[in-house]
Length: 141
Image 1: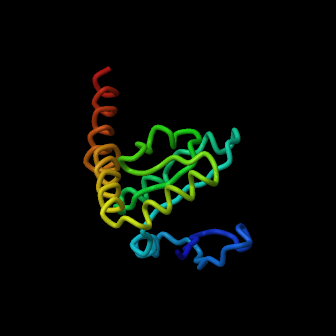
Image 2: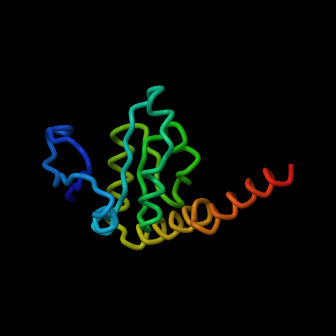
């Protein structure tokens, strides 16, 4: 197993020697295509509970299964066993990653389920229609 950290500092996990690449919007699609599993570990603190889950939707839009901490909106985005796993402790993280690493078909199924959720919830057409509905309501007042 290899780790690719995008936009991260070195030394976060002293026992792991990841490849660390600075984040850029231009490189993001290529970087997402290089991963097999998107991970989003978070401590359970008030700041992290306020995060929006954008990273999970990026992974899902790229057709990747996700493994995340059950913090904040993550619990609404990740459908356990469908598009990914929610992990509360080291043991659960290990089990989820091992399961996905050993089963390419499961990664594909979960990645496809995540892609559908991202497209149906936040695809361009969906967001455009929501914007038009808001504008229609504003002009009809």
